[in-house]
Amino acid sequence: MLRFYVPHFPLDLRMAFSSQKKGTSTMKKFNYIFLTLAILLFVTGCGKAIYLENQQFVLTEAIDFDENNKLIVFTTTPVFNKEATDRYKITSTTAKTMRKSKGEIDSKTSGTLAYGKSQNVLIGKKLLQDRNAFPYLDVLFRDSRNEINANVIVVDGTIKELMYTNMSDKGIISNVIKQLLESTYKSRITVQTSLQQFHQQMKDKGMTPTLTEMKVEKNDLVISGTVLLHKDGTYATSLNHQESSLLLLLQRNVSNPLPLTFHLPPEMFHTDEKLSYVSFNIKKANPKIKANFEGGELTIDIKMKVQIDLTERTFDLNLDEKKKQLEQVIEKELKKECEALIKKAQKYQVDPFQFGVHVRAYQNKDWKKVEDNWGKALSEATVNVSPKVIIKSIGVSE
Image 1 (spheres, helix red, strand yellow):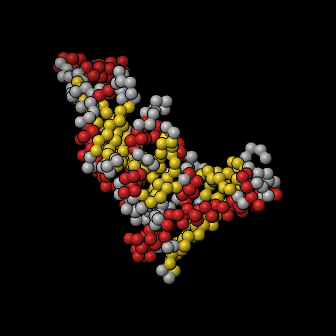
Image 2: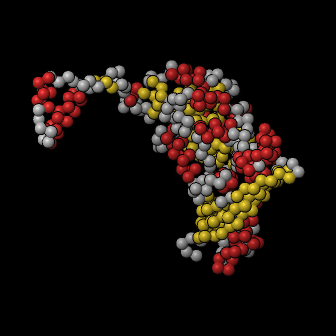
Image 3: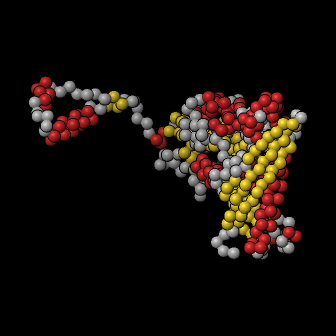
């Protein structure tokens, strides 16, 4: 806290100042400079000095079950001490709750813990397969000192293995995780869910949570796809990169190009099966959803115009003659893969596409009948996807 003390000038000095002509700009400037210097001279600070090397900024928090199925909490903090050889410190403890763990971790650190800069919240898949992790995170939402924009990530494997992965050639593990997630989300092969968004996904009846999935592979951190959770917060299933891109498409999250690769029927263009691949980026798409209840049965129709840029074609084709045919084949494959993804979600009675939000907005009367069991209602619905593909670019040369 800073306190400002304004000095009391002697009467004769004040009279001298006031006696100057108002039009004398030089004296006015002198007065301002003199007063500024006088105020700065008397400024004092109160409180003890805080040294950066004594602060413990928690950048990553993680929860998992240990081998005895007890809750274990990890934190990572950067090390600023010049004499230290490690760039960050990992601290762990077993506890009944995350709030309880903070006291235990505090007793193991030499500086003051600060949680307001958290970048990542990691959850072990083992924990999610057994129970809902959301109650364990309550302290992160309830305590205003916590950062609610931290990314929530599910770890396929143990948190301990990930935390102690060798980062000597990569940097501080918290920064590596954050940058890896942001780059893969920008590439549209996974989702990005903050603590605040996770809270909304858990509380909103019209959707179910989607979280980034990460694992350790040959001493490297890898974003493996997306995790879908049940409405009760437990693990449902995982999506690979291709399915994650389709998920973003159906969520209408197309601000960045969506990469897809399809294996086309080889007989379609008389090519070898091993080389019957086409890759493209979805540059623009506007899925339009229409829900209809008839006789108590729900039908969801999704129509979308999709503009794509070809990025790879592993077989010969005269596009001047076969462009329309190629567009139709891609349409068919896109429809098939989108509907397969939707059926996969229906199998687990989850709604990562947020169809429930649309039904609530446009079919509110019928929504009221199914809102408390929306996952089951969606699993019994008929969902049709009808894409219209237009090839906008075939690359630099043909």
